[in-house]
Length: 128
Image (cartoon, rainbow, N blue to C red; front, side, top):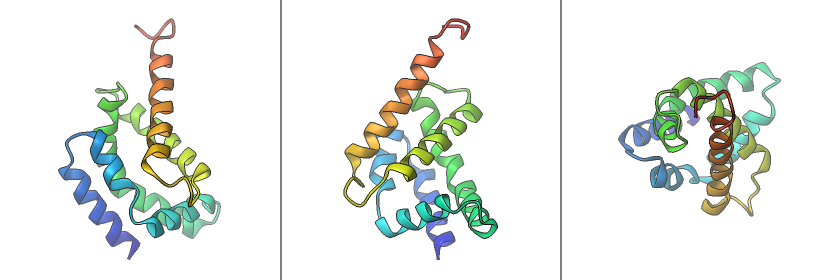
């Protein structure tokens, strides 16, 4: 069932053209799927959870990173963007609650990651 949902999300993200608003409108529903994935993330030390977590992310992530990279200013650096997105996802799952599972929370989190990337790219020695 969860793989089918991941495949469904992958297809939706393939059709998306912009991170904002597409990512935000597609990422917070249904809540049960988010909480399931959060449990997978929290129990990654168990091999079976880690396997499912990685398999589901491997389906969806390339499509999300395709949108995320230009949104955060890493247009031609998809590998680096994928690493930042992975960190953002970890922060999301460690901070999310039923009460704050909403678009403003997700936007604030992504905005923080975006600002961090911008700050890092403007540090001496990064060609900016």
